[in-house]
Image 1 (cartoon, one colour):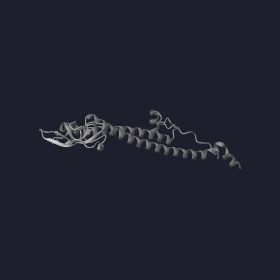
Image 2: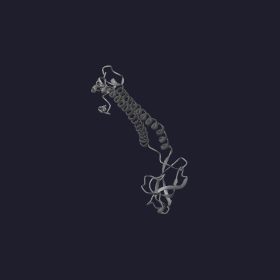
Image 3: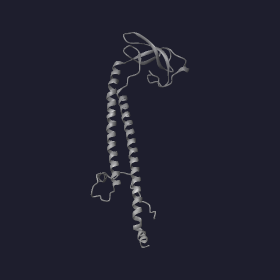
Image 4: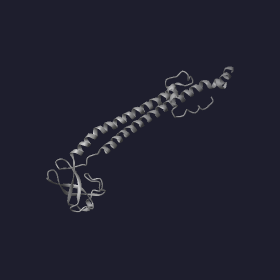
Length: 220
């Protein structure tokens, strides 16, 4: 039997919207469209619909995350207070904590230092704060404290809350789109295999008739 190859598959790019809709819903004025072509069109349509749902879900997640955390951020800004702490003693520079300390005020290199501050009602407090590595005794370091005068992390502003919410939504959207893309590729792969099998079976039936070999066997 001849091994004539199957014609090239159609482009993996989705057809135009109108054609895709006609194929997906089995329009009668496209009689040459095979069931597998309609299945491909439905797969693309479902993927597009899923992408819209993913976008809506991600947007909703961002809004929910923002509205859930923004009030707490506003409450923290009203509850916490920024005061000046005076460095009392400094450790050896070899014990510095580097960047990113808990109560830092934006210094690039900091060390733990004993400091004192007064809040509230003139009541003195002492504790360990993050001071710049170049600080000396008497250096003033801004810190955040709660109503009882204890050290606290700085409050989050609305801009940071908004950025965090957008990142949450973007992460959810990317994850959902990745799953949709994987599902679409798997579905198209299955349909391509089905089309290859249909072509092989159809060619096995028609090739002897088309080439005339079936007539030769009958004459023999």
